[in-house]
Image (tube, rainbow, N blue to C red; front, side):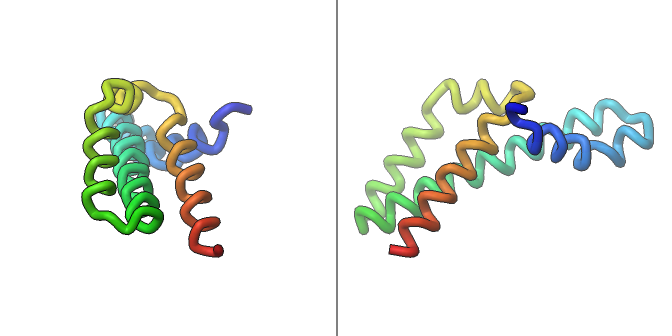
Length: 100
């Protein structure tokens, strides 16, 4: 199904808070997971651009572009697997680029 692994990660990350009956900590844990994948997406995108163009300026421009997109911030607040999927797609491109 769409995003099954992401929702499984969410349950695993939020399980200690859910076991302690702390819904506020469960929400915080789920948002921290989304934040980690968002930060990873920015890092992998900048690294990929840096390797391809050999320009630190281009890498910083990609970081600024990603961080200025309203959808990037909005998707971080919702509960869906977009950040994780983009992270793994970019990571796959980075690995394929390194294997060249």
